[in-house]
Image 1 (tube, rainbow, N blue to C red):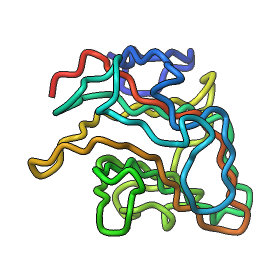
Image 2: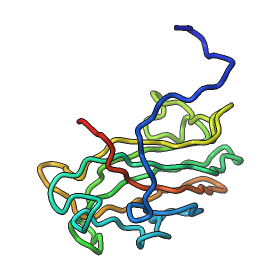
Image 3: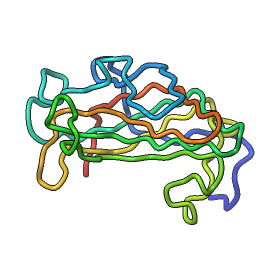
Amino acid sequence: MALTANTIPSQITTFPCPYDAMLAFCSAQTLTATGYFNNLNSGQIDLGGSAPVSAAGRTDFIWSMDITACDFSSADESYKLHLFGSNDVAFGNGNVELLAFHDLAAVTAGRQVATILGASPTIPPTNLGGTIIQLPATNLMQRIYYRYLRMYLVAAGTTPSITLTSWISRANVNF
């Protein structure tokens, strides 16, 4: 195995995560401020509903984010992407739990753990066709199953703008 980056771009095998509009938070939605992604399924996925997800209990899945545009032009933009779970359909204050998290930023200081993570890679990465971030996740947190899922963005900086499609997939997840 080479110790330096190969000059020929390649893509490593990722989780098999087919897109299903019934399990999507948004499709090519652009946000320029803090808020929920919600242009599909009211931005909410009900894991207690009908197939293809389980009717009750623990649901393991891959949270996918296909990022097609992300503005870093002012060098101070940051994007904190949250996957929230709740048993309150209205996601009322105090009834929400953070299930998964990912952040992107123009410079190191914008990252959640700046000194360790460093600056985000370019979007899309150099020599690659696109950026799909995939995170294994579950609706189980502190022995509580969360029925509803929503995706939330905290955007900061001079000109924040991010466009993405996000969904969950029941892949072969073995935690």
